[in-house]
Image: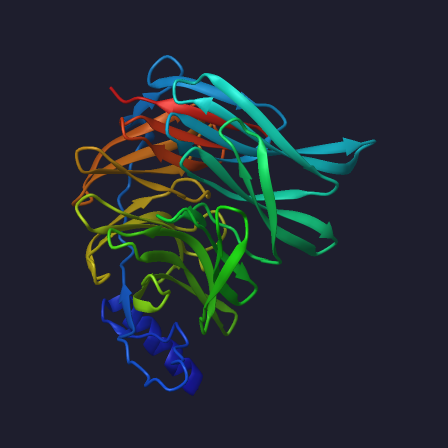
Amino acid sequence: MKCFLKIFTFLILLCSGIEINAQVFRLTPPPGEKKVKLKHRFSSIDTTFLDWQIEKGTEINAENGIVWQKLKENQGFSFSAIAGETLGMMSVEYKYDNGRASGSILHLDIFGTDGSEIASGSLSHSKGISLIGITTYGTSYYLSYEKNISSGNRDLYLAKFSNEAALIWETKVGQRFGTSGAGLLKTNEDGDILLFTQMYDKVSFDILNPKGEIIDRKMIPFINEFSPASFIFNKKGNIVALGSSRKYVNRETISSLVVFELDKQYDLVRYREFGSKYVDLGLDVIQGDDGYYYILANSENLKAPYGMRSNYSTVAKLDEEFKIQKVKRIENKSTGLSLRLAWLSQNRLIFFQRSGERGYGFHLFELDTNLELGKFYNVKGHFLNPNTFIVNDKGSLFLGGGSSKSWLICVQFN
């Protein structure tokens, strides 16, 4: 009975907008230092969402809006990144012998921002490869992926490629089971490479130098189960990271968003937890030119019968203290997630949802900094499973993704 009352009280507070204490991090001071108390706050977000109709959107297709497109057959699950005037697309090709898997090839295809094909490189493995992410520094590309070693056993790797797709080095980071997200790999101002990783209940930042040497691993202690999703470097050079915190109560999953900031010494500056009455998954975080943070999440009502579950995208605007300034919730008509959020010129935001409509790949939603919905676009074509969003300094928009086939397109709005 006491357990039921605690859960009931928690859900009332969760849906009411009242801030409650939330113990997310396990804060242990170094030897000889006094414990510093931080305010641990839970901010609730309601579940009122904006509906939209596909026929009211602007159609983007090969004749209207898509400047160029690249498609790689038999190369799937791609991620892309930009380095100056080139774009690198990593993908994986699985090899079969008499119907049995016989290895895999990791591909790196480099294109010009005008769509020209520049170079291709690859590396092979006798078993499966799972892609994690890709990032750049200068003209170099850094690729992160897992190699299957044996049944249930795999290792995380990081590789450096030149802008001519030549492999420079490959480093084994080690076992990092559970690492999966669209924004987990970045380079800092010194050219070091950071991986936001997970190994079961252990969360960390793995740090390598440009030579491929592992120089540090910073552990981030959480009390509840935590899944990393994305991180950025803010205008101060600090890390601002986003993920999902989960706990299980009487067979019920309680999942919320967690955003936190670490200083350059990887000490915790602040964090805040957000959640609704649904299961919330943190997906992406950016900082706009206006200095505010914008986070993207997906929420789903898992209590409803299958096929009747409310599913929506949440975009929230936060100040430097991670206090909510505005929230916009938009119905997600597909069961796919909204994965990436990007900053456009003229103080606009844009994100995508995978499409559940036949003939369409995904939908793009444009918001102003007050999170008011402006235009939205329906991208027609077999552009399935998008996961990459790139905006260059000239305002060109590049999107990529794929499952059985990898694709990369350049989109231009009228």
